[in-house]
Structures are given as C-alpha cells and as structure tokens.
Image 1 (cartoon, rainbow, N blue to C red):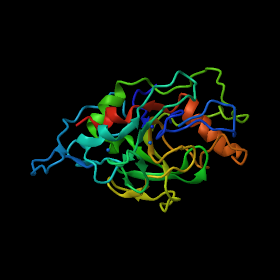
Image 2: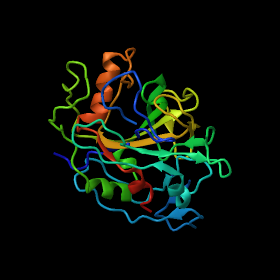
Image 3: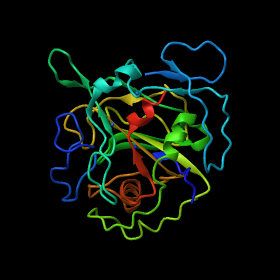
Image 4: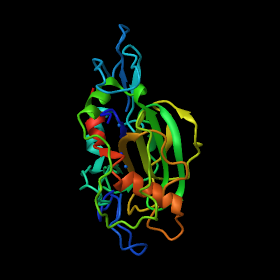
Length: 287
C-alpha cells in the first residue's frame, strides 16, 4: 500500500468555533495561512518567502519537479503566516479512529481589538493551487464551503515529506456512532493516485467558484462568515490526504434534507479512514 496517499483537513460549544447541532441530530457533530513563496530557483527571494529543500517521495507514483516554484498562502487575506497563530480560536484535535467528534480542523477568527467580538467579512483565499471539487451552498454542517483537491506532484516537497510521516490511509474498521446510509462504506478508491484536500467552511456567501475550476494560491475563496454549524464568525479549515477523485455529489449531514449521496460522502470524508486529517498548522508552518 502506498504511503504517499495524500492529504486532506469543528469545534464544540465555543464562541467562535464550530458548534454541535442543537436539534438536527443526536449524533456527535463536526466542525476552518498569508503569503509565502517557496522557490528552489536562484532568483531573488521576496519577503514572506521560504526555500524548501526537495525531499524524495518514498512511494509516489508521480515525478516531482524539484525546481518548480510553489506558492503557499494563508487562508486569511492580509494576515502573514507568521501572525496566523494569533488568529486561531479553535485548534486541531486528532479524532479517535472512526469518530466524528470535533475538532478535525482549525477555526480562524477575525477579532475586533476593541470589542473583542468576532467579525464577518475578512477575505479567505486559496492556500495552494488545486481544483475545486465541491462548492457547497448552505448545507449543514459546513454551510457555505469550498473544497479543493491538489495532486501529489503539485504539493510543496516539504509537505510531501510531512505527509510521508503520517499514517497510511486505510479503512478504520471501527463501529461509529455516526448514522450513515447503507453502502457508504462500499468504497473502492484508486490506490495508484493520491491527493490533498482542503475544505474552507462557514463562508459568508454561497461560493462563486465552480466545480472543476482550477485555482492558484491566493485566489479568492470567499469571506469569513457563520453559515452552517457556526455560532460566531470564523472560517473552518480542514485538511485531509487520501485517494484522488473524491466527492462527485457534494457533502452534508445532520440534516433531514441531506441526500444519501451527500451523507455517504460526509461519512467517507470524516470517519472512513481513507481520508486522514492532518493539523493544517503542521503544514502551513513548514517553510
């Protein structure tokens, strides 16, 4: 089994975090980094720039161009990577195998320095390049959200090295308390190709991006909001690695309007073991 299967990324009862549903379900409920240029060329390195020494992928089926320039941006427009830690309201917590318990990502909030109240509106941008695979409009629990997929060979070499140190994606084979449609676990991924998935959730407005659209680091995703399962404004960033080509039919749960396809995707995303969560800051601070 390839150890190169890639990556992917809610908080309970915290003011600016991802909250548990009040009446939609009795299931445990789920739960959001300024620009850095990574360059391995000899050109002048601008400010907010870091150089990563290319690391050979242990089991990748793709060839990495060690000399290409890969940009890494903060999800928050105008907030440098060095200051991003100050924007964290709810940190990442690695879930137990098969558990949907929060918090499987990071919540970033824009707090007014005088009132100490979280604000809506701060711009959210793409962390790295990729393609849009989900443009979610007001679906519980993520609300308005965008999910992107980035192929292994397009990832920063330092990120590849970190992912190689993580557990290999595989079914948890654990009985979960989460209600999932019949057949949700009948999933046969393509183990020959892997990707990193980034979810930007609880956005202010419905996404303008379209499924299949290519984006580069720094492209606008939306703005901090409090859609979906959010009690206060924030953006929930959830990163996971696993098999490529996920989610043809959207993602939702904890809502009677969620379709079987949406719920199956949610269960695969959160509890299957095929898409393993990783702390976004572990990657974003790797420069």
